[in-house]
Length: 491
Ligand SMILES: *[C@@H]1O[C@H](CO)[C@@H](O)[C@H](O)[C@H]1NC(C)=O
Ligand SMILES: *[C@@H]1O[C@H](CO)[C@@H](O)[C@H](O)[C@H]1NC(C)=O
Ligand SMILES: *[C@@H]1O[C@H](CO)[C@@H](O)[C@H](O)[C@H]1NC(C)=O
Ligand SMILES: *[C@@H]1O[C@H](CO)[C@@H](O)[C@H](O)[C@H]1NC(C)=O
Image (cartoon, rainbow, N blue to C red):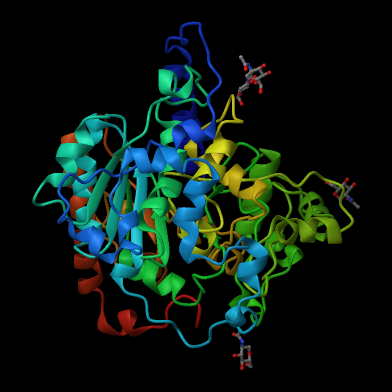
């Protein structure tokens, strides 16, 4: 874990230094409105036979006409996109849906076509877009927001574009964004806008949106297994890789557990912090290598919850993690510590329900992004805007079941996964034990860019190969281990 933290801080530092030196925008800053930005992120299909349109409903929403949209810009636009949704959508409305209280005991059938992937990228990294087919296969559709106003036309008409669509959104500092730089990296507002623009495009044609960096790889079998217990009609944002107090994953970040865990006996805060991984967590919090038994015990027995330091999420039923629910353990413990939004790590990826996405029109998301002046990334803008909307992240649970042992983080988690699938040389050919098997089967995503440097071609090739490498390792596992119970049931 130490290396992970060190690695992350190094990465952060290198990002800060490389971007702090980027030229400031010239004068003449202009305030832009969300309405002005509605014309970006629109998929233009000169070829009207594009089959994606067939699934769109109402069909006339499918093809973009700038003139039409100008007329109904502003609230009209949202009304159009949200025709299919309950008008008074939002967390509460979704939560009252019938399926709400009874958590799904019967696993819902989810297939690849229930998923879409959304990301923001640059034309110079466009190879990564087609590399995502390695994990998306032919059924998971994708929406790429890119920095070129002209390229999407050609990209959208390519014969081989496997369920991919491309749209333009300006970069930080661009005149279209009023010259403002709202975040550290050039593509951050675009990255933040991607899921909301993707929802505007796809409408209600999907159940779950996978959101990550352009070099995030999702493992679809693990993803499907994860969401099978959850209701996509509820507003749900999933991640267990949250930045808080300058580190990630921080298992003490305010969040919730899913409703179906209400039945489980989960470790108490004291049990967590008296466990071996919990002690590691305390050392990380205190930033000390050796700590006396007395200090451990005092820390573990202290029932006051402090986000970022000592916090345990609770299952919420029905499965809607409101910010109040995420902060309730803190308030209930009598703590007055501030309960502030964590940032889900963009590289590790996040999963959003269609219920969540339709509760936030593109325009409202843009309005929120325009309030930032100093964000650390598109992931922060998105996480904070969800929080302002009243929604906090739901942690799928393994991290809590395993007393904050980072090896059970499933979003971009399992530090050993790259070596398990052969991306990194592990040195030893140790057999895959139970934990290794667990990781291979349950980790939902992996972040690639750390693994190789700036060579996009090589990165793309590796990104494309990873799902196959993982499958190959899974196939080699002894049969009985594969058959063993998976996450959620046994352990
Ligand atoms: C731009 O927005 C800021 C903050 O909302 C406001 O203080 C300022 O007056 C605006 N500038 C113009 C030219 O409208
Ligand atoms: C909780 O446990 C009861 C009894 O074991 C079971 O019938 C029920 O389905 C469980 N509920 C959930 C949400 O898992
Ligand atoms: C428990 O933790 C809180 C917050 O860190 C601290 O203020 C308080 O003094 C602690 N209580 C005990 C009994 O150590
Ligand atoms: C921007 O954020 C950085 C890091 O969070 C901070 O050090 C800096 O003071 C902030 N700048 C402004 C103008 O708020």
